[in-house]
Each structure stands twice: as structure tokens, then as C-alpha cells.
Length: 213
Image (cartoon, rainbow, N blue to C red; front, side, top):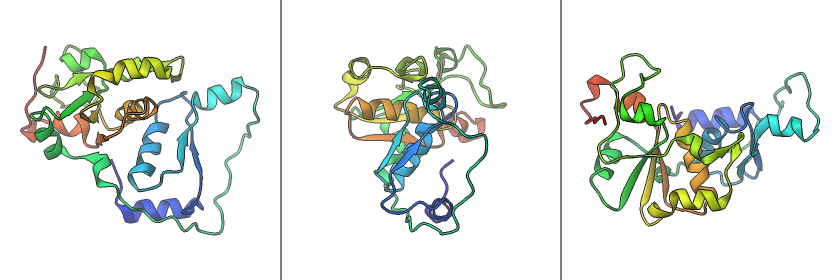
């Protein structure tokens, strides 16, 4: 899922993004894909990035202006340069080790049914179930009406894991980023996203362990 630093730099520069740009990310679902973009910028070393809580629906509901056409790309390229923060992304080897280390916890953002293996995976060919010793926190549990839940609720969800390094997983690395955003808003540090997520781990050819409830 994550592009190379060189590709990310090139695409960000095409958008006119600079090293000192303040970036606001939003989507049309409230909060769904925007945290993924937020996390990608963070992982590429850009800290001045935020997510619009409630996204476009909240913006429209508040009566703010919208336009029907896309903005044209700026003629001048930005000077953004990726500076990868490798600790913010994990691969399958990192996750395998973390599952057997009490200093880590792997949190799965998929639905309870998919986590337990009683609901089918939306991507054909993937095995049902979850990683051994992982914990299920469906991404919907940190949202309320398309917005992030209150800090008090978010802290109550993540508090028991606050002394561990959290690695977030889901189906493809998108909703895992919602959990990462929620944990960040709960002022919890030491977070990482498993980029391959279940699309990689659940492949029969991966040879990675899977359990069902």
C-alpha cells in the first residue's frame, strides 16, 4: 500500500506541497480514508498534517462553502521531501515478532465477525480468522456519527494498552489508520500501522499463523 519515498515525494510536489505546508485531509464519508492519508504524511516525516473531523458531510452541515469543480494542479511544484519514519510502519516480520512480545499489542480494526472468522472476507481467497494473540477493536467503536469519539471514550478504549507499542492492522491498512488516529488523539505514543494487514497475512501462501474463534 505505501508508495516508495521517491514516488511519495514526486506526487506531493505535483500537488504543490512544500516542506512547511500545513495539510488538512478530509473525505466524503466523515472519517474513513482520510486518516490513511494523514498517517502516510506522518510516516514520510511531515508532522503538520491533520484530519478534518466529520469530513465533507460535517463541512456541508456547518454551512461552509463548496465548489462543484476540481482545483487545477499548481504550475509550480512544491519542495516537499519524504523523510521516512520507519517506526511508524510495520511489516509481517515485525508483526510476527510483536505477537509474541508482551511489550507489544496488535490491534485489529476489522469487524468482530471477520476477526472471529464467521463473516467472509471481502477480498477473495483470504483465509478467515485473525492473528494469534491479537486484539479486536473494530474501527467503528472509535467513531460516533462520522466523527471521532470523545477523548474520554478513546482513552478508555486504549488505556489498557498505553504502556505497550501498538501495531494496528485491518484489511488493507486503511481502517487501521483510523485506530492510529484515535490513539493519537487519546495522546498515546509509540504507534505503528501494519501496511500489509490482512490482505497479506490472510493469504494462504503467506504461511503466517491464523486462528478462528
